Length: 411
Image (cartoon, rainbow, N blue to C red; front, side, top):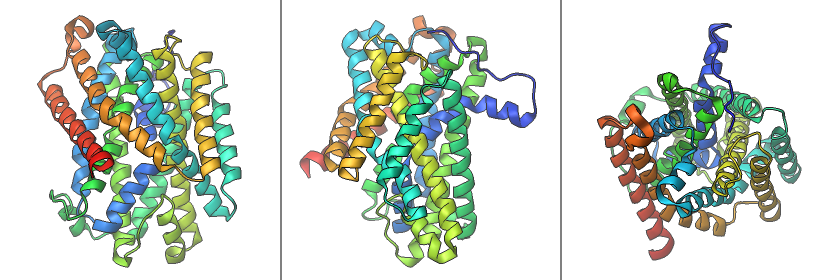
């Protein structure tokens, strides 16, 4: 793959240099936080107030740990992470990992597509299906710009900015009691909250997102001497992810819990804001929902399409035709499921979670083993802190997998 020369220039205003610097980190944050994350976080705040705010920081720290490992792998090696899996364990490892992440992203794509459609249909009181079609076509059209990576980076930055402004506005409007916010940082799990806690951790600690970070830094063209900058870039994006997640939980705790309003979908808080604070407040929130949905729609498809193409030895450059075709395939799958069923079918959720149960913990182990392989990493092998976070993270992944397995097959 020919590396891009998208690194920050020394010229330009401080704000422009900051925007150029964030790059892949914000892309990772944007694709991790989607309508599913928004729904889970809103439901936690609506049901349990600020009690589970403490869950977000450790989940974000674990995500940071694996993002740093993936970033260092991407900078240290000219080989993609899947190709390193192939070199170390054979074709089966690369194909299994690539296909697992492809099917997971494809299975959840309908939810991203529906979320983006709902943001418009609820705002303009129109049917959802035309917006699903328009949004999907818009996403596919982005693929055929001359430099897809640059377009992806700018779209994701815009979507993150939209989310931050919308959700911070919602938080300011909600006027949370800061004493309760501080109290929510004390660890405790209320009765009936365990499954939602598992879902929140899973949505914030995304191995798929961390895995793909290595591809993003290679696409951008970071060099070994720029490892520190690449790491800071990745960490800044995950920090933004944590801020967005915490903002939504606090807003839901302040607005929805006192009124005993249940959350069933990503648009419920927006629908609640309108009668309380006026239609403009609901519209601002719906704009944030669109940002979360569209960024995950494009981001998830990009992950799944790139990794599937790479697993089949068809290349990994975002500007290559096979990658664009696989990305388009996932977007089309999401649109068709959304149009036919009108919601994310339970069977697809079960299928995706079933793959996650068996695949994700081992993908995490693979990342950690490669990042400790001195023949690949050289002086960039993991230190004590990263290995400690890695061991804890893998334990959490197995716990999440075990909990999902119990809920799906044994309960």
